Structure formats: C-alpha cells, structure tokens
Image (cartoon, rainbow, N blue to C red; front, side, top):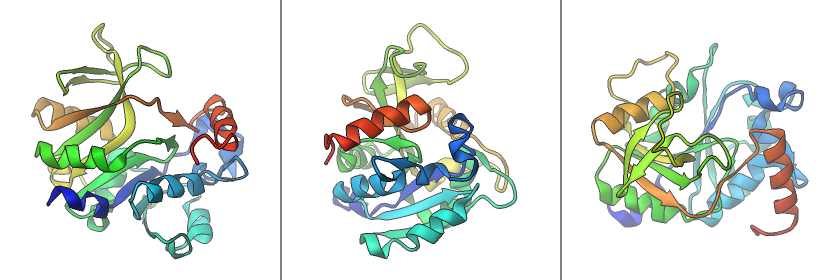
Length: 241
C-alpha cells in the first residue's frame, strides 16, 4: 500500500471492557459515553481522529455497547463511517476483540484504546508503519514512571522488550495507546477465545516484527477518576481545539 493511503486505513477502537476503575459511573454508562467537558468522550475522540484525517472507525464493543450504537449509529451525522464489532456472550480481551473484527478491518489498520486521548500526528505514525514493512507498530513515550508503570525497553527505534508483568531496569518507556497492525500479525492466535493484545505484541517483538515510534507529547486518558478529571479541565480550557 502506498504511504499516501494511510488516511484510508480504519481505526479499531477498543471499547469492550468493563471499566471497573471508573465505577460507579460505568455501572450504567459505557466508558465511551462518559461525559467529559460537557459531552460524551467518544465525541472528543471522533473530532480528534477526523482532524487527523482518519474517518473510518470500527468500534470493538461489548458491555453496554448498544447504547453507543443508539447514539452514534453509522457515524454519518459526524461525516465519518462507524462499524461495530461485538464481543458476543463473553469478553474476548483486547486481542480477541481485534481478531473478531478482522473481517471489517482488512489488511492493515490503526488500533486505539477507548479511554485514550492522543493529540498527535496519526498520519506520520501510519507512514512510519508502512515504510517499516513490519507486521506491527507500537507508539512509545519516555515515561520514567511518571504516568504509569514503564513497560518497554526502546532503543535505536526498536522495541527490545515489552512486558507489562515483568519489569527490568532498562524500561524507561511506556506503550502510548496507539498501534498499527497487519491482519497477519494475528495469524496463529485462536479465534473466539480470550487473547490479550500484549501477547500478540510480545510475539511480534520476538520475531522482530514490531517497530517502534516515539511520541514526545504525553498521553491523556479517562481510564481513572484522576485522568478523567484532568482531561475534563484541559478540554474545557480549549487547549486541544
């Protein structure tokens, strides 16, 4: 695929989890519909992606996902295209949800977490992925334990180690919340089973098939009450408009 075509790639948005850290808010409201700066968080994400030139979204949803369908439909009111991929009767995990959505995602696609707000150049990241020729890309941020536990050894543009459970002193970076993959990255993993995306990424690292892209701007998220409150203030201030 020519580099200029990265804007046509779909964005798989992982939004099927139970969001237990945000209870009691998420007992009746899915995370994407949590109000931030006066409107649902998903509206802010759509605006961000559209501004970046990405207009195809495949929502990987589960718990309370029908409420999102009810509100956003096919995305035409927003000038974008939204498709939905439901987990089904059981949660499939981040990797399992992507495997389920592969028929809608095609050969290559972005992956974004449903609680991440990332004001960055998405097309530059996509172009780096295409030029790399690898099966996957992970964006990383030099974290030094500031915003969460660092979990990546990154050097010379390469992901050397990625492990969320076993820390090493050389881990100064953290996975930023945006990735790109080719469908072939998921070959060999079971269908209709619980698969963690981290396991797919670790397998790619072992095969030297996961390229890295370092981001300078810190990430924002609504995965915690603290993150939600912080982003609410920043969005109300107009900083990202």
